[in-house]
Image (tube, rainbow, N blue to C red; front, side, top):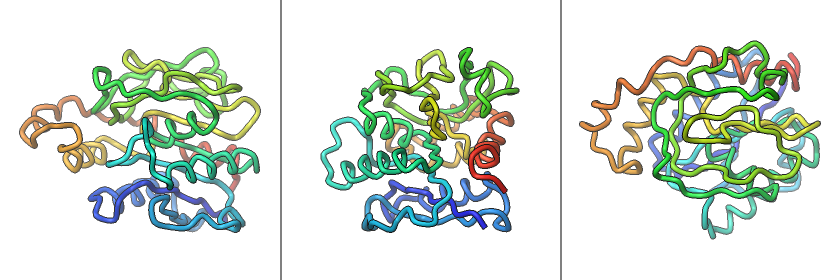
Length: 240
């Protein structure tokens, strides 16, 4: 059985901490194929043997922490861990916060861009490289995806190739050339219902009242094309 390690960046009291685990678990498929391990970057020690026996690493979002001007000791340790994953050649998939943190770990830049925040379901367009990439090959362009962010990657690290963009976010997805490493600003682990649940859970972060979110519910649409991305990633780079 293959082991997938999920790195979490969520406080214990975060209402979406367990929800995130279940969202990844559902999208990855049944436990008969993959065992999902959880490591908190906030509370768990990073030991030399952490990556031992791990077949792939995934990183999701964060409700309380951004990457810009993050001076926490755990954040710098997290960046070092991401570098170690890349150097060891372990397949790595990062979404949202992970997408931004990986860019910083590899020498890219992330900026706060509240004027371009995306909360809800947005249209994502593949680049020519994205259309040819084995992970996105066959997806329609544009396709709908779930988002919830206020920061974005402003400069890519070396050897990174842009695979997708949106009207507000030029770098919606990238990969490292020649490596099994992908990142998306959007959430392939979320469907419409799960993203809406998360929006309600983080209403304070977006400075929205529950009433305002109810008015925004029409901005949350189904995104069936993204639901196969994580299973395809595992099929391509981890195997059955």
